Image (cartoon, rainbow, N blue to C red; front, top):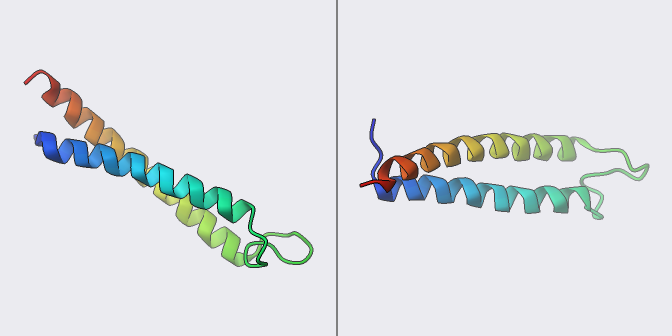
Length: 79
């Protein structure tokens, strides 16, 4: 399957955007002081684990989508 330039750039941008957003989210989750992510003893809560799993999944999917976009951009570079 051939991707157009526009779609390739969109996928690449989406992959980068996903990393920017979820890295920021993960940092904020780790520094959470509201009591949602860590209990009074400092142990991670279910909220922390669920949102960490969401972030990791988004990193993986964002990377995959970004790689597909990068391959499309490279394939269209010579045209």
